[in-house]
Image 1 (cartoon, one colour):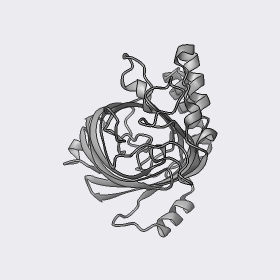
Image 2 (image 1 turned 180 degrees about the vertical axis):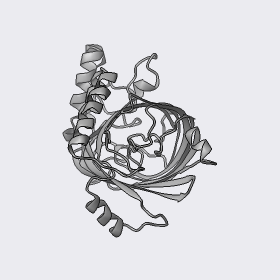
Image 3 (image 1 turned 135 degrees about the vertical axis):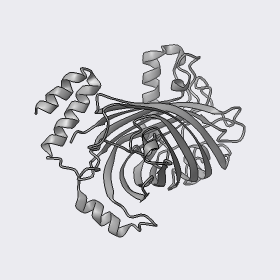
Length: 358
């Protein structure tokens, strides 16, 4: 109890209060992890095209807004379930040493054309669309060598595309509040039709560093993955390099539409503070994207001609402070996703993570 009060007094902010509640929950559940076990965490990711250029001219464009709220249990949470999953899912060359279950409490993506003031459909630009979902995640980790760790991410999301996503009302309300009546989107009547959605995601990530001594300062995280379902079908590969101080034993920052979900929490060896810079590249081969191709049934809803190959160049930073709070920013430069798109898209991604205590 004394440790809880001390942690709360260090950071007197609303975010620290969230962390304090999570720490208390961990204590109540009698968390007792092994030396390298991870605790649980709550993560909130907010993405917006305006974050990529906060001091420039505001413009909603293509993938314009995303929100994802995830809650993960620690390595000792429902271990009978994770053990059963390990027996059912082939290990594919790794020996799982720990596993975590997560719940995507809420996710919402919003897509618009570049001109949100036009009432008529714009057949040459990205359609209006929303994707609202909830889901479950299983992540398992292991070691292939002393300086080479691996993580697998299995995820299923269920939701809806179309007016039921409340994307139109969400965007209109935010614009009315922050930008006034001169910037209210007027074309949402042209969005995709309602359709249930399914996403099945898989990713494998490796974390490599040359020696044990360099692990605190430098590592490289290659990754491969993909997605199946009526929302998206794609395969992807990429890598991230991190450089900083007290690098955490996680697998880097993940954006919302990555095949891997947010990961990483406290261990008994976690330093109270860390900070690092990172940069990465990803390539994606896209076979289907409902927000570009239109609805799956009866060829309904607006659509554009999708590009098969799409690339991301990313950079950003991550900071952990007060032991239990982590903040990350990622800047994404995404190549053209459809035929006729006039330039790359820029997206900013913010993640706040509140970590349980041991």
